[in-house]
Image 1 (tube, rainbow, N blue to C red):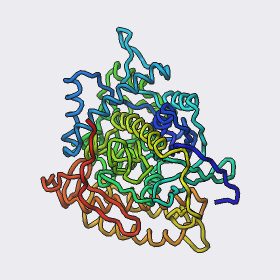
Image 2 (image 1 turned 90 degrees about the vertical axis):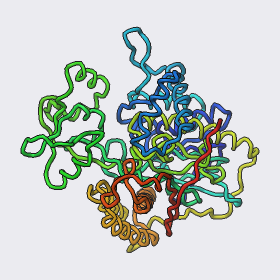
Image 3 (image 1 turned 120 degrees about the vertical axis):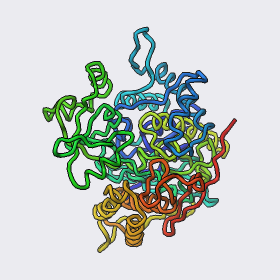
Length: 523
């Protein structure tokens, strides 16, 4: 922290400026709350959504269509999803996308009858309009203002946050009646497009004040990307044939089922690809729907429909994975008074079970959970009365000071974490004999991190958050002694009925894992 501190008082503080954060801020402001939004990047341009297009789990309120939608991924997710949560998300998403069209004037494409197609959005335009809506609602936005940690009042309730305004060169201290965390997941700085701000900062901040997590074993998402690009648009690879380096077809490889075949092959040789199952109509639709997918190919002089190109797998962790903060109820509260969570920082098990929500389910979850958290935070702030909470002198942030002579540098901590969580043979192709020593090295790293991390405060927080996230992830992966959803253990093949339960994870110095109690679903 610098000597200059910007002091702000508000009703609701929202941390994160992606879709979950902007919907939360909009709903809180619509409910009459004074709202401040802080974003690590520039709200409207940072994060995974702003950098690409995405589908949206938008389903007409037809019983048969809704039933099909809810049943579509239950098996993939190991039957850990909850129909009550799914139904509520479908309702909220349907209303939210309709509102985006009317209130936000989003230019949805139209079908042959002139009816808008609201099953997807272009990320840059979507987030540009969400920023405009939030500003028109009176929300104060602090861009380039990463979160360092949460503040607590004497009664243990969350009472604000501290961070840095990077471009202004000052620190901030926001005192608030409620906080909504919408800081995104953790992709471990893997290079996946739009995920550079997703380092687990909000998850760590919540854990420091007593929140816990759920579904962290389902956080080993890897997405297909061209070797020369960072664009991860895995859905398009459903049109692909995959090849070995010698040009022979790689049998069993695929974008939805068969990604492990790709990972195993990449351990010893390159994997090539061609989108040769897309005909002219599909090719035209793909270019219209996701122009950024094709930009790296066009720049490299590659026709992905005719030419072979090399691919890789990029880790997306809890961004496209499922794990995150456990929710105590459909209010999206974390169980810590005054603290709410939305979007990728919160667990998506409730609607996806143990399998990735991809783009569409995660987009629907961001809109829905953001809306619920924003409304609930505004109600909590109103119920708490006009007086802002009194903060004890020197309210602590649990992680140690970010600098110290002789301590580990932030970049070295990040590299050490990546050495354990990015390799396919450790995190994707899981085995207890590889997970156990990896977790042991992460535990040892955490002990060093607790002595201090050298670097800018926000970079140090990123390094610490990645270390914590990796430990929670591997502890849960070792605890679940079966294969379910995206969590596949080579030494524990097949699903075991005894493990048909969600797992909670928590703790900082001493990580724990235990069966979860089901979250309540409102009628």
